[in-house]
Length: 111
Image (cartoon, rainbow, N blue to C red; front, top):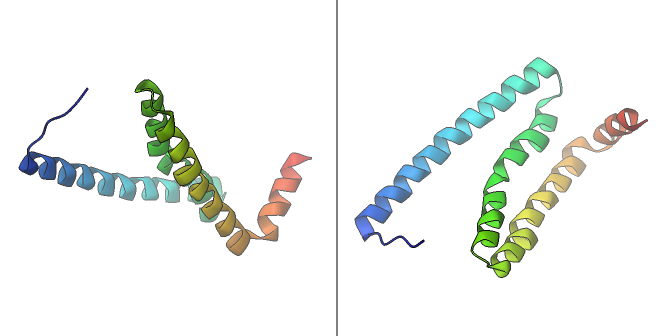
């Protein structure tokens, strides 16, 4: 399937999509705050798991699309690039801001 858009239509589509992404991100962040407040899990924990998981959905769609169009290079590049960057960001944030507290909570829950 190929799209043939002229430049003004492509710009309008880009700007419209950008607006949807911005408003969705704001709603996602607010929903994460509500979940953190009502469950008592904390903003770092909810942000690290739920928000990061939701923001990784574009990579999932990219990988599914790559499989459907038979482009393994796109899927591999996405996995090794974007997904690994997200995982490393989570690890750095957990190490810097969570440290021992996250480790202790995980250890208690694992017993």
